[in-house]
Amino acid sequence: MPASAEHPAVSVVIPVLNEGAHLRAAVDQVLSQSFAGELEVVLALGPSSDDTDDIAAELVAADPRVRTVPNPSGRTPAALNAGIAAARHDVIVRVDGHAEIPADYVATAVRTLEETGADNVGGLMKAVGRTPFERAVACAMRSRLGVGGGTFHVGGRAGPVDTVYLGAFRRAALDRVGGYDERYTRTQDWHLNLRIRQTGGIVWFTPDMEVTYRPRSTVRRLARQYLEYGRWRRVVAREHPETMNARYLAPPAMVAGTTAATLLGLAWAPALAVPAAYLLAVTAGGAAISRGEPLATRALTPVALATMHWSWGVGFLTSPKSLGRVS
Image (cartoon, rainbow, N blue to C red; front, side, top):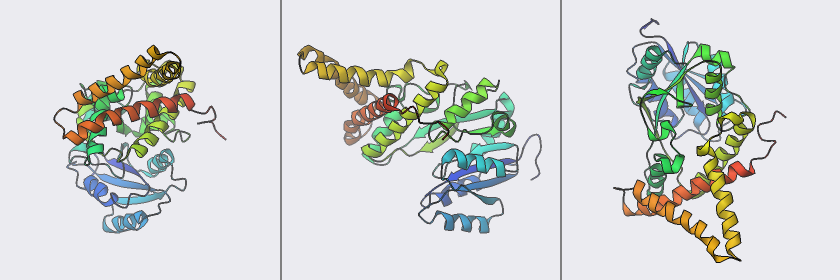
């Protein structure tokens, strides 16, 4: 169907690296969207070590709406910029290679862009786990106790926000801010949305857009993920100190305070009340946010909370000053 005011043509950009297990399903979900307008899929292929490239080639051969572009660095912001540069249309929808989106996702995104006049719209990052630990992480990610209240994590009313998950953009807005900053291995979405807002654009959250997110499956992987989040959020703080608030400072403050109190407690026992209070808080909080879950998940939810808090806080405090600088 040709593009029209009611159904503008859409380019869906997917950064891809080692997604052999999920890529076919992700692309099928995009191609089967209920959207009535013209649709294309641009796969930005990194240097995968699995069968991702073979699957991508099969998808291209099977449907003319699917194209690929190379991303030699394998880095997500570079993949997104390459895909956007190759995209033919004026509405750009970002989807991940392992994302699970509903059939009306693109139609809802386009309608919301038109109704609000926003430059970027996005919805809920719905964390859904399969194993007891993944379910525990999902409980933590959907709660203010775990993530501090980000709208795209915990939900809320439709309206302007600081950032959204993934996103559907007007190309004009991406051109205005120069696309994704390729220095940012992490938090590139937050940084892009900051620049959109700084240049007069609106970032809009709607609960009508929902993406299923699969949490990390082990403590080690979760810790690595949140350590990187903390390190890169510190980079944003150095460049844009006006963006800092209590939500972002709480984890590093907790890490510093709890560590200092524990060390002091070796010589002065009353100081141990501080780490004990934190342990009690995550235990009680974990029990509260995991109501209705199986016993194994409820037992692991405090572990997930503590892992997220400590990893993010340590990452923020130890972020090297060289991180994010152009070499």
